[in-house]
Image (cartoon, rainbow over all chains, first blue to last red; front, side, top):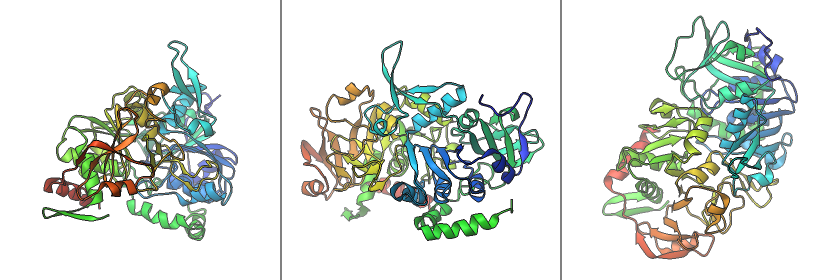
Length: 281
Length: 258
């Protein structure tokens, strides 16, 4: 039910535009993951460029990448646990959408990190929900109806239950893939494996496609048959970082604060940095 | 930020806050570190009196030893200097939830007299907030599961309120005994370190009271910066001024991060 790969199918190597065009549809539930490291920014901008609408965006930490998608009007709903510009401050496009409904109203479904991580784990495990010690006494369950109490059938303890996340498509960025589409990731791996395995379809953008994946300590490998498409997108995580390739562009995060702050400056950015790049990839 | 001169050393109230927070951590403790003020304090502690302090960051690093302040919770330096790098589900499920962490070190946008924390919305209406804040992140479960919680936050009438607009992370709920009733296993906030002094829960009621004043600060000044009728501990004490070593460590860390 979950995996788009038919028996014997392996990841196809495609261009970014083709990958997004084939896998991301209007109205889809889309997860872009990467916990501060390896954030798939180039893919996010390609979704804007292809003018996708009514997406339900899922991400633990909707930072700049979702500020851009929300500001461009691609999303109708956001499922998340922390929305800010890390180390800088607020996400102004996100705030404008929540507080003023601009450019389109944004419904939110708000969790904690532990809840979101467990929702992906349940999704990747083929289970309908996950159980955790969480949310007790907080105001979150009053506003988020995907948080319920459950009684342990063995001990009688009260615990929290959260439903599985099974995005239509999950998108992550990784360091490398080989020509067969096996994906190699190292450094902080966040919740990327769970996001890919929970999704019906997946797109992995990589810094480079190589003949052979040389082992790296602490690596994570996603086999080709667990991934739908791979696209080579050098620098595809900028302004976040790709360990072994480039550092986080902290100045860009600062700069985003002024770009995203005003509707005008954001529109200028969209025109100059996203739409004029049409077809360039 | 008022500058204070104390035996030739000049320092700001923010520096005093970071150093007081650093002193609260003991060597060998396992500390779950939030970004910003908590991370600054934890790294000062590790470079002064607590070299074996274990820093855990929610991005998936156990035992990070950065030589500058990380710019974000997932700064590459945290992974490169860690004893182990793990996935985010593992951080929460294997390390935090079972109670393996001694101290949860958190910041707050709003804090109330029972140490409940709000980082979600300002205003009474969740659907139409006056200000939309970033949200929960890891804090609710950090506040629930660490053995104890230290909060480090600048003190003002805006941030120190009688009741938070939204309970993102539970402190002592609505008073003594609430944590037990809610099934929260850690002790909750045992220390609140601000730029003016230190607050601790009253053992009888769990209401935060002023227990320590930083140098040059008077009780009235702290009460002025508090949105409830702040009680003062009968054993009110004075924080020692920062030492030269503490100040130079803090400043070197900040300088290295520029």
